[in-house]
Amino acid sequence: MEEWLYNPITVKLGIILAGILFIHILLRVLKRSIPQYIKDSDTRYRARKFASFLAYIVGGMFAVAVLGDHIGNLHVAVGIGGAGITFALQEVITSAAGWLTVSFGESFRPGDRIQLGGIRGDVIDIGVFRTTMMECGEWVKPDLYNGRIVRVANSFVFKEPVFNYSADFPFLWDEVTVPVKFESDRELTKELLMRVVNEIVGEYIDYAKGAWPEIVRKYKIEDAKIEPMITMIATDNWMEFTVRYVVDYREITTTKDRIFTRVLEELDKTDGRVALASTSTDIHLVSTPELSVTHKKGNP
Image (cartoon, rainbow, N blue to C red; front, side, top):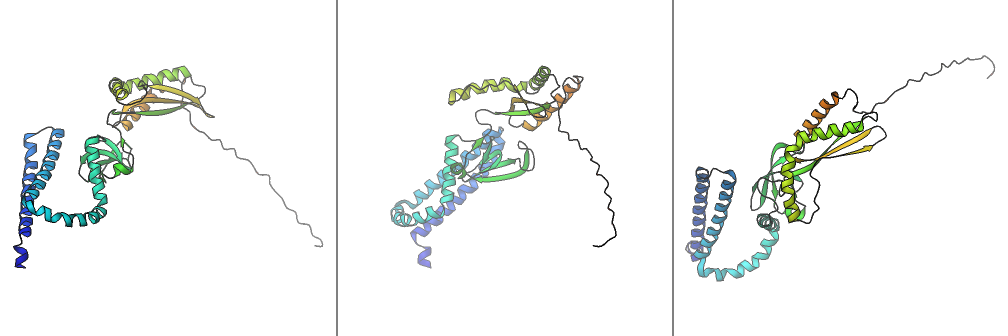
């Protein structure tokens, strides 16, 4: 027992553990003091991440410096155990590789709204092994927070597509469909809908026009139409007008509400020239003739 305690390698491992503990305590103190000097939330987040990364580097260098000439004696054991460790920790290693991919590949960053591993939400932290998200959707509207904090393994960046709603172009195209009776004034309907959508989403159009040329320059993509567009098709029951427009990815639900509210207000002003259509079913009652049965006496 005493020989083991006074073994040079054992002593040096103890020194390494003590050094790592000291670095850890120093890192926690540094992270707590950062908000006192950095007020911007984005810069503060990056400073904390940089401090953590620097602590890993310093800890590794300290371990190498302490072990010194004993590293050569350990390489055989490390080589033998390396294969087993790699197999046992393949998910951890893949997640760490995913963190490197995210950090240097610009797949997403804190503040982006993404869908990763089947989970949609806003990225609030990117760790070495997991990405933390504030989830959207499920039992609420798709663009609203539901209150759950979700941690998704970074390995999913290699297994599933990463949908980014806000990376280079922070707008989405959305549509509103309005059914109108055949007797309605088609031109007035288009004019009414265009006026409403320009009133509600006009503030986004200029911003979207400024952002889209950068997408066209960066990627091989067509120069899409940013302005609102209205199309019409005729169904068996009514004319169906579809309004297509760009909207901030965080305000899809509220924008739809505002558009429908204004459309209904404008329809009331048309004095019946434009009327919403709806499905109606007429039920006709059919009378059943009265049946009478007469029994005659006689031989069976």
